[in-house]
Length: 292
Image (tube, rainbow, N blue to C red; front, side):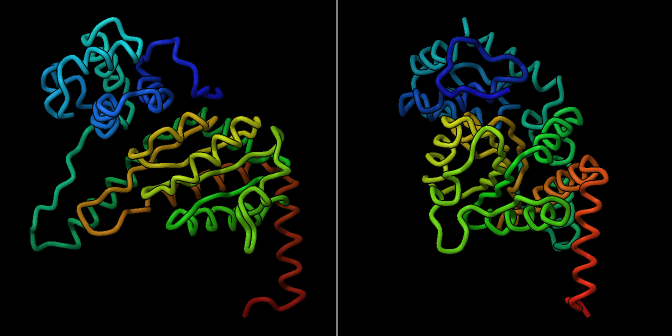
C-alpha cells in the first residue's frame, strides 16, 4: 500500500507504529522529534518504559510526552505501550532489541562472525514471503527499473543493477555518469519502479528526490536501516536491514543478501523471457570472447 506522508488520521497499530512515526515525523516539534528518535532507534524497548522514563531518555518534559502521544493519535500513553508490546509479540524484527556493544574479548574473529551473522539473520528474518512476491512482481513488470543510491549505498545499488541486467532490459542507475537525478528520472511514471538504497549516512537531497518521485506516482522500493527517518513515508515498500556493528564501519552482509534474494526471486518470475534474455547475453559473450 502506498504511504501518504500527509495522512495522520489513523492511529498506529502493531504493524504501522513505525510507519506512522515516519509519516508524521516532519510535523513533530524539535522536542517531539527527540521522543520519536528514541522510539525509532529501539521500538522494542518502548513497552518497557513508563512515560517518565521515556521523557528522561529523550531529555524532554512529561508534558512533551503527552503532546507526542496526542499527535500520534493515541488516546493514552498506555495505548502506545500496548501497541509496541503487541508488535514485539507479533515478531517484527524492528521490535526485537539486542544491545550492540564491544566486549573487548581476544577472540576477534569469532565475535566478528557473531555480529555479521546477527545482522544477516535479522535482515533475512524480516522478509515476509507474500511481500517479497509483491515486490518482485513489480520489479519484473516495471517498464523501467531504476537503481538509486549515494555514497556507500551507491555501490550496493550498482551491485543490484548488475544482477537484474542479466535477465531484463530497461535497467539504469540514477544518476548516470554526467547526469543529474532529474535528467535520469524525468521520464519515469507509475509504470516504472525505483529501487532506492538509503543507508546511513543519508544525503539530505535523497529525501526530496524521493518525495518528488512519490508525488509523481512513481513506485519506490526502499531498502534502508533502522536509523531512517521520513523516507519510508515516500516508499510503497520498505525493507529494513540492520547495519550497525560493534566494529568500525557498517555491516552490509544482510543488505547484500536481501538484494540477491530480490534478484533471484525476480529471475524466477521472469520465466522463459528472462532465461532467453540471459542466454542471449551469454551467447554474445562467447562470440566476442569477453571472458578468459
